[in-house]
Image (tube, rainbow, N blue to C red):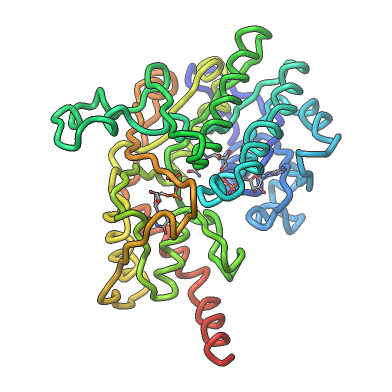
Length: 386
Ligand code: NAD
Ligand code: UDP
């Protein structure tokens, strides 16, 4: 830990980070990395702390004096500004960020992703503090290629689908497709942060995650989240596998995604944290362009991997089709394809993802099986008994 140097060979001094949303999926992995591999301090802000409990207790942990949890809802808590002032850097992860909410709770989604982030940007700007803000790959919306005829050869041309931070447009559906409430709110907060940088000198970095997945992502419905809740695809499919139900393919599972292992992505964030001169003023795609699959292929691979790690045979009918209206309700729409361009992050931070989709699913599903299989069995036997 001693003698850490940045990418330009300069020593890195320990600093204090105000991490908002530290109790979530990404926050928990980032806190873990910062505690185990760096000397930095974390003021962890969230309404929940279940996913970082192992870092907060017992008080004998070697990093106990470097992490403090503050149970704060940033919507309405005057302590937030004080914490931002105490820190050298603020990282804002707080958001409603599950697609099932975008069309069913559009107001909460817009408030969470835009209005609630405003004071964070303002406090950083007014107090001359650096900000790393978590946006999303969803700000790109649909690819240009999605609007070409299905048989157009141009669909194979990367110019029509690769997503570039400084060149690609943001293409959203119409207003009644409320799915885009999230992307639009994220886009506006990005523009506001960028403008604070341009007009008031705010030192910022914007991160656009491309489907980061791994242990502790979301929840398993009925076990550590609401029975009727709909998490992101990794947790939906894990839940189906654990319960021995067919995996549900929305609108045929034809959409394409690139999935990146959370631990690879956290390496990129640590480079941003420790190399401000290279990261400030930039927007970074963080994804793994080599791990592209359709959702159907993801379902098939997860079925195979789960069978390997659990020792259970696969179902005869491992997937079923479901319409998006049935699954998500009115107003759902989808991103067709998400390939991140890696030029900027490569040039600025020399970072590349490492883990293949098979390997990341193997470690993640091993975790899901170990963490939930027994609890699901018990919950299912109780339901049968009743
Ligand atoms: P998450 O839901 O696991 O974490 C978000 C955390 O923010 C939660 O712990 C939540 O309790 C907290 N939070 C929300 N509102 C809050 C409030 N008002 N006050 C205090 N805490 C609050 O999600 P995640 O996957 O860790 O995502 C973190 C960020 O990254 C989000 O901004 C999200 O939009 C962005 N992102 C993530 C992905 C991904 O692949 N995981 C993809 C695109 C964008
Ligand atoms: N999806 C699916 N079945 C599920 C959950 C999700 O087919 O049980 C699809 C969803 O329609 C989308 C993709 O999987 O095309 C990824 O969904 P996720 O919720 O992870 O978020 P997104 O990548 O759309 O932001």
